Length: 141
Image 1: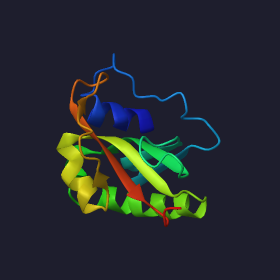
Image 2: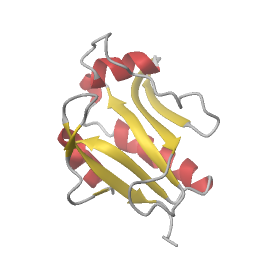
Image 3: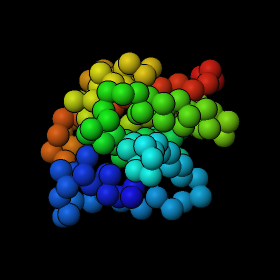
């Protein structure tokens, strides 16, 4: 289910493109999802990883945030992030960060993330424009 949603939304349903992260099964990795009936419609995976900014903070990287096309804009993604942030904060996480697709930046800014100025790049994986985004979950040390 998770990989199917990732592939459909993030990889244009191309079976040749990767939708797995080697850290998917790590004990520290956290996967979050939202369902409509029995169908997974939104997912977000967080991996314990040093951030490219404020490296001293305990940080998780968001990867593979995907909301199925027919439910985008209905608040499912934002709801999953609220739940994820609460759990990650309870684990002692101080910051989350991601390489966000530029087409999704408005969503991330609306949910409290900050775009790192000058961080724009083209993803080698998708060939799409991305930017680094961050969100503090706790007071910075």
